[in-house]
Image (cartoon, rainbow, N blue to C red):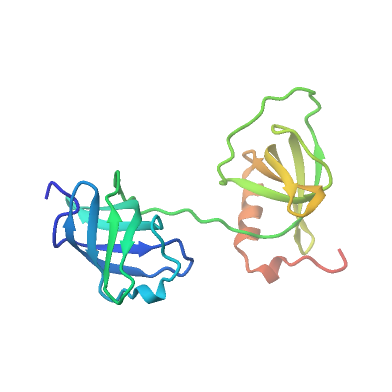
Length: 213
């Protein structure tokens, strides 16, 4: 068991980067320091005409009482109905940490005003996609680090104000005079957090913007 890819070991394999990829069970037939030969029951090469040498492959396996994942590439697959594939031996495998991240999307009308009048600002590089609001259809660019006050209209006459700073800004796709930005939210008070939390997780129709607003 010193080798994570020992003969007769059963593992999971995903071929390619398709959105609708199928996870197959595979058995290690032979392995050496460079390649692994896998028998994949149910795999039909004729359904994978886009597979070429170098196609990404994901392997998931159980080893030393833990679960691991490794990324590698396809070395060879047989053109007939043979259920065998040859992949390069992964350079390393990583233990799987069973956690995930969720992103919630809700569209609100937002007004903003600049509250930082300093000419020079320190650029911020803390954008990681979490705890941010994506501002779209901005009519002007901003420097990274610019502080703004946002007024969010949540529907049914409910609105809330929050403050923060710009962490990323790019041009809108296909709109040379419009911009989108990532806005990092400062820690607000409990009331503000409760309003945003309720608006974010309520059914969309409960916070739909009235046509006459």
